[in-house]
Image 1 (tube, rainbow, N blue to C red):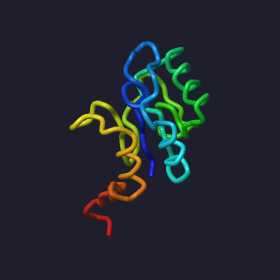
Image 2: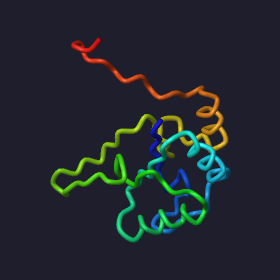
Image 3: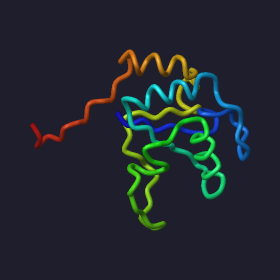
Length: 126
C-alpha cells in the first residue's frame, strides 16, 4: 500500500516554518509501517524548509520512498505539475475528525482494520 504522510502537525507538532517536536510514537510507527508499505512524504514545504524536514526524518531513521511525488524518478515541469498523489491512504492532521495519533493509526493499519481501497473498474473492464 502507498501511504502519503503530511509533515507539519502529523509527523511533528505544527510549528511551521520551524520543525516542531516529533509526535508521540511517530518514528516507531513509521519504521514498522515502512517494512510493508511505501511511505511518501506529502507536504507543502518547499526548498530549504522541505530539505530540513527530509533531513530531520532521515536523522530519526525514516527515508521516504518519494517526497511530494508518486515515485522518486517522477519528472514534472511547473506548467504540467499536479500535486495529486496516487496514494492508497493519506495521513494528515487536518482530516475529518482530526488526527487520532500514531498509536491508533499504526494499530488500524497493521491489524488490517484500514485497507487500501479497491481500484474501481470502468464499465468496459471485467
